[in-house]
View 1 (spheres, rainbow, N blue to C red):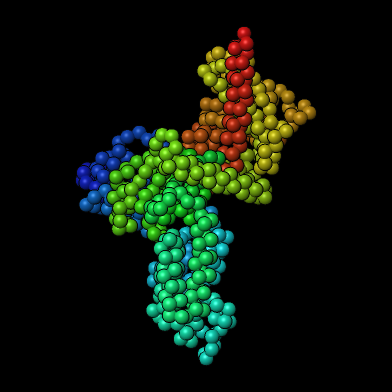
View 2 (view 1 turned 90 degrees about the vertical axis):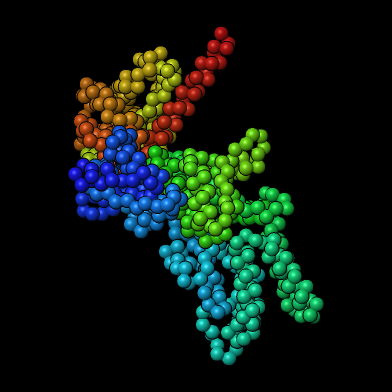
Length: 562
């Protein structure tokens, strides 16, 4: 730490605000917020950190700046603004695999409704509604809106002296030809906004009232159109699941699941007591940052929300984020109204608990679909993924066949091991193997167990159905890999070119260790290569746990019989 930085740290006040870290090149590398700036900043430089990422960050800090705010809420808002503006490399920046579309009601004398992508958002263009994560459902909604509300279709008139085809088929009111007054058209726009905001019940009442007025003034053709719109909208409402009867309560139910390096987030939108929409998001992350990723998502989503804010947000996962009062205050500031947070607790058949469980079911489906999609991508691009692995991990063989091993036991009893095989990026389940570990029964010793299993496996090299692997992955850190390499050397197994490559994968920071090297390798968090070896490691763990449970159940049954 340089002297200037030391002096700056001494001057940091015990007040809320944001702190900004710079590297030697003057680039902003991290932005954070704190209720007490001095305490937070001091902790970076005077405490031991478990996280590799934090240790690397601290080692690169050359300069510190801070901005004092009046409250922690103001610090939270300022932090979000600074992160979006500077995109510091050590802050979590969410990169979803999709660019979600929005509806735009254009800022014109006679507005149109358009579909736009997130990168094109500009508040001066009009009012936005979204995002819509299900593109198919969004376009179906657009067609329904065009049927229900005959808005202007063209930016400029097709003809100077007569309406175009859209007018004649009832899909436009031809404002370009003066067929509708600005007042009548704005009423139509207001109805579209009610629909997009989830206020369908209020919209039904307005259409019904309009229908009656047309009938009373003997404008029967217009009254008939209103009647058709009313019936179409009523059918749509009937298809929506009723969550609360006779209520105007608006809620967002959020569920978060993490598995196999995939973070799946689902938001169920309840408006006026009806489940009207589901939004889902997938990110490829590491498990240690799950809560931090979700917190970043939560802030980004509600800061950029283009739909009406809910009255309540229900999520068990927000309890891990904490600071409930802080986030309720923050939501009030950005939305202009009171929004409460509920952790979906309660015994029995609590309504909030049931809704959260429904969101979890949807998140599980999103996660499974993302996993299938990711593995299909790896399969199709395995030449590229394998070459990348070989280059980054200094492998001497192209990793066509990868084996991974894991140990499972409870206090040394029923110790078992698994061997899983991936061929060209896909699991080859016919080659999976199970091992009962004999050398450590009753005395837990993962190192010794792994030595036994690898000895038994490697002694069968060349036998039928025991094909030689190109790469063996050990679940663990430097210690596990060192114990394995000792066995490999004792057995005279050739390592490297023409033989077998060995690496280990430590779960805490997803560090990859190579034989006889003290420094680990960190693959990019969003790379297919890291996802593949994580998936192989997690599959080995799952297979070992399943075998261990089966053995334990059999042992329990045998004891009961005896």
